[in-house]
Length: 255
Image (cartoon, rainbow, N blue to C red; front, top):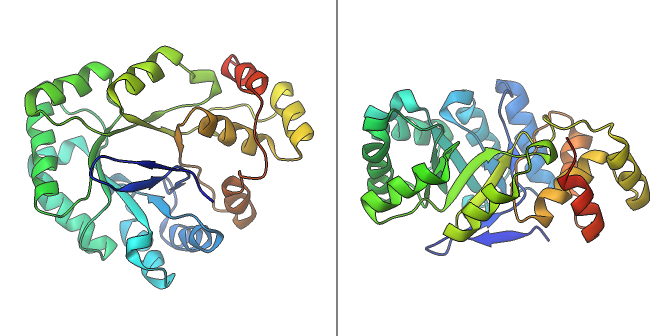
């Protein structure tokens, strides 16, 4: 059973998501189909990835009820001044009337920070998105949005891996009640590291599974990406083992 986290307003966010960055048209379709078949119910895309139509087609062709799948897409900063039009285009490509989470992909320029966030909140009020959030924002930038509008982004998607582990930054998000989604967790990790190899052998899993499980132990949402069906399956198969406190502490200090 996949771990989940509740977002304000009652949406349930599965903590294991499937990332689609750099997956081209045919690969994106086939990979998302494979992920849904394995059991993923959280798919992450973005306008920047140019594969929203392929993701949407895979969701439709899977035969799984749309309500059962949590779909995230993202707004490029350069599209901030025509955000609604960009969202409507994303929804057309995805073939759905709403997305579960719409993120601002990176902070815009200072003048657009608050207006862009207000545009996302208006899209939420209009029922086009279930949740609005941010990506690659600092806690200070999150506070700026919250103070200006009275509505705090419930999610911040940021790079996270053992080498980038920052307990203070994690604590800042926790204190605000902001869910951290970590991306590039495997890409930025040496999966041949002896510490990971030892743990993988001891638990009977792969080093990648150890790293992904470590994220979950820290309550960080993960977005592993692969085009290989066996990897897609193993990245999702994280329930059969758990890391000890000592394991987690050792991974925390990897560089």
